[in-house]
Amino acid sequence: MAYPEKVLANDEKVVEHLHPHWITLVPATFWLIVICAAGGAGIGFAPSGGAHKPVIIAIIVVGVILLFWLALSPWVRWRSTHYVITTHRVLIRRGVLRHSGRDIALQRISDVSFSQSLWDRMVGAGTLTIESAGEHGTENLTNIPRSDQQQQLLNRLIEEDGSRRVGGYAQPPQQPYQQQPPAAGQPPYPPTQPYPPQ
Image (cartoon, rainbow, N blue to C red; front, side, top):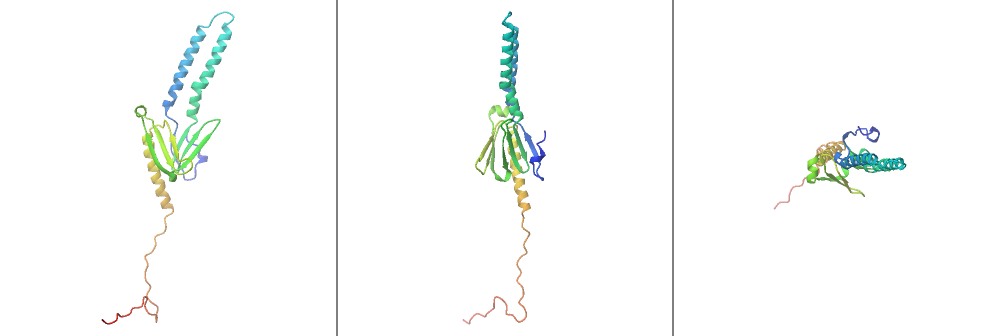
């Protein structure tokens, strides 16, 4: 899904639009399976008689609450977290009900680094650290897909952004200074005087 064009400048283009790595959804998938299996077993072994219906309702209510808390909520957080790299900046957006965001201009980024554990290297994830000038100088983006490639991409975009800015504000070439010949009847400048005899 492309990032909304209304937040971009006229000459700005989206280069990469990322969500956290899919590995962050593995616990949610695990809990989905466990809760469904436990709920099914609880309903199957529910006592018969007058307590049957209240027990079934209790199992369903608890199961739905656990599903929202342990399975659905992580998926919503994953879907609502955006890491957008453009030709001008890095946009970070998080949250649904409580929305937060940060924009880091490429010209303000002083360093980009990544770190990967052995597990991160196996699944193709990692942590991307962006250092920039400002009050919130360092931004750690965890579980970034292909963090090593994103670091190289950002470094390349920073160089291209710097070249574009230098090119946009380049001064016109200056002509070399040429001494004008003296006007008619004027002595040359600087005046030429003979050295005194030795």
